[in-house]
Length: 477
Ligand SMILES: [Ca+2]
Ligand SMILES: [Ca+2]
Ligand SMILES: [Ca+2]
Image (cartoon, rainbow, N blue to C red):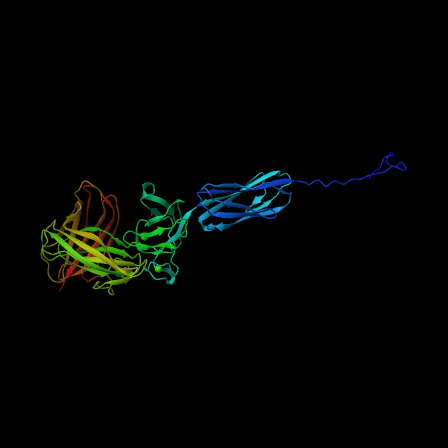
């Protein structure tokens, strides 16, 4: 401090005054905004170091404004509320403050330049129903099809859950879609009460195995995939779960042409969506009604589309678990006396049986394999032999000429034949492939063996296009 001459004159009195102005003086006003409140619900809004604000929802959108209270720069103030009437779980709280940029979460730090701060805590009322949609496939040691999420059964994302009641607009009171974990939160109108239905809409390709009613005290009905329960005013519900499994897949229709006296094979596969048993039934309709068509179904255990020595005909139901694929081969015998154009439609029915939430269920899947003698789907086959009669021990060759006599492209041509009776297989040839046919695979017996000769030709055969395959056999001595 520097004192001037006057001040330092002897006898003068020097008075020094220190004034402490409140740096950054500001006020904070607390406000409580209700949105769609349950009437008479009440809270006490608190802020560190300040008087609390009591608010009663006397109207659904009640606003309560407190008095401005002095705060100082640098103060940290935690804003919170406690319910004196009602339940916090029925409301979604959002805190916002004007006149400051110091709010982080529910903690306000008063800034040096803040003057008039207003903090509003808005409580929006919600009935909520929460739960999960999950894949009840028994993964990770769980129990498949029991309607309960156990083991490592995972949630299913993107599934819609809808709450309905006649009094809501279009009878829909709310919808929700499950998140990545299969969880959903469905918000209902604040004033909703009474009986509602909560329905899951399965994703395409799923079956319902059951549902859990959570704390609703309601009932789940699998046929409608709906939990029905009574909503109390102001209450929220949880644990309303839905259990689904992927539907089984059964593949596919087949159509082939074959010569009289040969056999044809139709591959199929059954992919289990969940645990159960599956059985297969074969039926047929032949036209004209020629006797001698017969068929059996093999389990192609190694899925190589061939019947290996260790593989056998399916004679009973098979146990399957989620994701398991059964490869099947339907073997069709073409009667030797079948005329050209004769047709046989094989019907293969897969019936899946299981127990969903302790109730027996059964689902059937059907495919058809259509065999046409001589030609099919526009493909004409003409077979000629190199000689009408041959001596025992001599060779005889057969040529099967194929022609697309339709006006459309034919793709994936398969020609089935087999060694005639009393002959032994020697060799087979695909011949020269016509335009657009790129490859020809021969499946035939070993030399001096007997059985099917199958030419699988890749590519498209144009209208009028033709070619010829051949094979040679030796007449048994
Ligand atoms: Ca389960
Ligand atoms: Ca369902
Ligand atoms: Ca096989």
